[in-house]
Image (tube, rainbow, N blue to C red; front, side, top):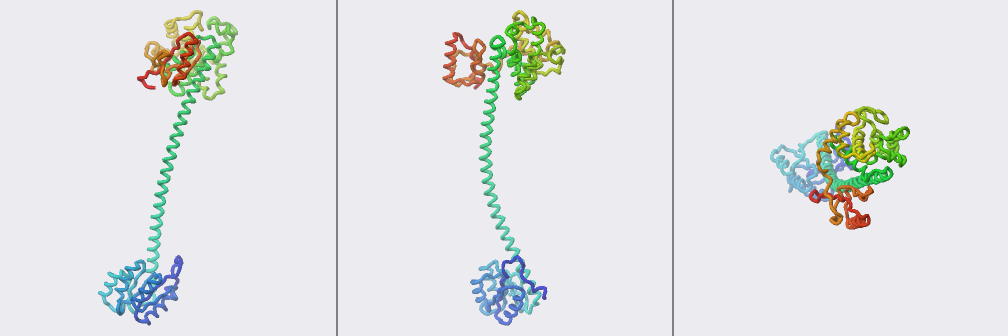
Amino acid sequence: MNSMLQPPPADQAAPATVLCVDDEPNILAALRRLFRPAGYRVLLAESGAAGLAVLEQQAVDLVISDMRMPEMNGAQFLAQVRQRWPDTLRLLLTGYSDIQSIQDAINCGEIYRYITKPWEDGDMLLVVRHALERRQLEQDKQRLEALTLRQNEELKALNQSLEAKVEQRTRQLKTEHEATVAANAKLKQNFVTTIKIFSSMIELRAHNQPGHARLVADLARKMAAVLGLEGRDAQDVFIAALLHDIGKIGFSDEMLQTPLTLLRGDALALFRKHPVRAEELLMPLEDLRGSALILRSQLERFDGNGFPDGLAGLAIPLGARILALAADYYNLQQGAMVQRHLRADEAKSLILDAGGKRYDPHVVAAFRQIIDGAQPDSGAGVEVLSGELLPGMVLARDLVSRDGLMLLAVDHVLDARMIQQVQDFETKSGGRLPIWVRNPREGA
């Protein structure tokens, strides 16, 4: 019995309150003597009505009620307790074996347990303790459920807030990405345009025919596409073709005007070094290093008798094999390689005859496919007169003057002011400009 005389659980903020209801004062006194040493706060009532009055004034954790009482028996009293204070635990104390009365108490008052008189103190304390522990567990469960529900609602609100923020951030990132892509495209376009302008400046120094570098670059680009190059590799070939004469920037006027077959001694040795000089000029620019490597090998021969490294076959970069053929094809027609200007068909014949010796046979096959195919470039567009230009039209080719200066780059969108400037330029120069715009049926 002494083991039952222990305080309530430590996690309780205050001692549990027990209300004892019985019409016999000696029973109430006995219950008070039993529960107080165990650490409980004990309230007493001598009738059901008195018990209800106590409950109306004070918070009670557990009620122990006698069954047989005048005016209001235990079952009736506990039924009202259940209805008005459902969280208060209810025990029935009965001194006789009346099964019907116990059933009434269980059904109406939903009692936790019933205890018969006389009771064993140890059993009584154990029942009360277990009942209060169960009540504490139930309250903890309800509190945790309420906390979980509240936290779930807070989490739901937080998730909705996060979803809104993520959606907003996603839209922002998408807008920033689109702006970055547009800026990169514009930067790339400006980069290529700058290369084209620089190429035009080289042509003025090298005394080439206007547009020579662009012809070489266009042919090289087409051959690269036939041979499966794309992306950065194709761009490296295109840029290398535009700048293929950059290594000649220090040549004298006399040397620049002398065909290759007439160069001798120091002049020939200097000529053979211009690819290395071109590489040295471009190597500091990281974005042009691919093109610089192509320029270094542009004078190599497929049979290994070229310069400066004597590379042979597939050891020569593919871009250099493409550039060598494209540059020679137009140099033959402009008198840069032999004393006379060859016709296009004559230059083509020499190129085909040199397949496997000077040129890669696969590159020669791609060249022949392009020359013989006579298929229009999908991006060529249509040629129009300056008077036919309208705002919003897009250039399909670079707009180049008769002396080879690039006036506007491909993909430039014309507006009214620019159209007027083009028309004024034609008037002042006394000649018509070759203006190519994208076919309106293909869309801008």
